[in-house]
Amino acid sequence: MKLSVLRLNIPQAILMHTSLLAAVLVAPMLLCADEARADEQSWSQRKCQFYQSFRDQLQTSQDKSELGEEFLKSEDAFVASGCTGRIHVCPTTEAELDYANKMSLRMMNEGATGSFLPYSCAPTD
Image 1 (spheres, rainbow, N blue to C red):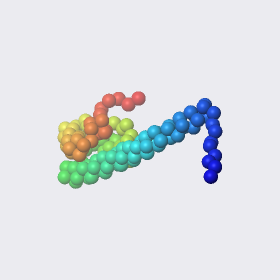
Image 2 (cartoon, rainbow, N blue to C red; image 1 turned 45 degrees about the horizontal axis):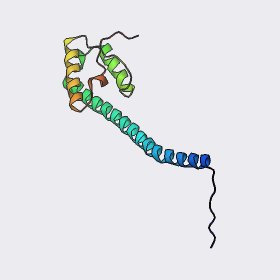
Image 3 (tube, rainbow, N blue to C red; image 1 turned 135 degrees about the vertical axis):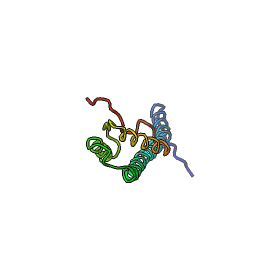
């Protein structure tokens, strides 16, 4: 039985092996990156669900009339953005500050960082 041998010149062999090695090394990284993006997206969605649930609970237990129209409108816009928009919800009354503090504590207890929360009175550009 005669075996045929694939004859490649050295640069072709190096290129083929390098390409194969790159594919073997890069493929798992791409899969991990996709999985990390999916986890990150689902974590963002879960944080927003927590936020909406806590908001509903607090607005039921607290007199909603104590919260100003602008405050509620801004918070609604934040939720409508999927809790990802950089929308400033500025507590200007004691009741709004109390509400924002309660929401902040509940969200942080669920693992959300302060940067997730919309509460800020910084001027918008």
